[in-house]
Image (cartoon, rainbow, N blue to C red; front, side, top):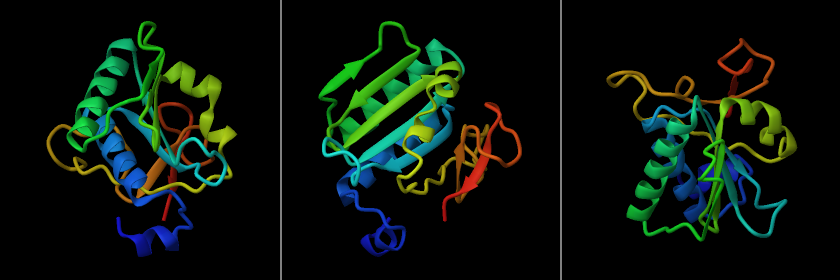
Length: 165
């Protein structure tokens, strides 16, 4: 995503943060994470630019997504400063400084509803590169971001897709 596109979307996160966030979202999608959402929180928080939020059906999938996100971001030269929640596997937080990745089981995603807490923050569009390739990916249709609890057609968490463009 280029700088002009980011400006059009009113995104103030750094290009590096957006690059890492998109890579983290793709890594989550590769492990069948669903209801993927990237939020630009840079105007609201001084400590990070983006949140990446992903859902998983169980603890094993949470761990698989977390491992893949770490591996993919390490290839881009990013290493998590902090990890939380890994032992329980219900909600794991990876802090890459510019990007904070939240991987939650479906139940925690609905209960804590981070996207509701940060609803005033711009959504950075994410399109899963694996959609239509092989055995389906865990995200919504290309060009849209899935947001649990939205008012469109029900998805796995009672929400649907919100067009981010």
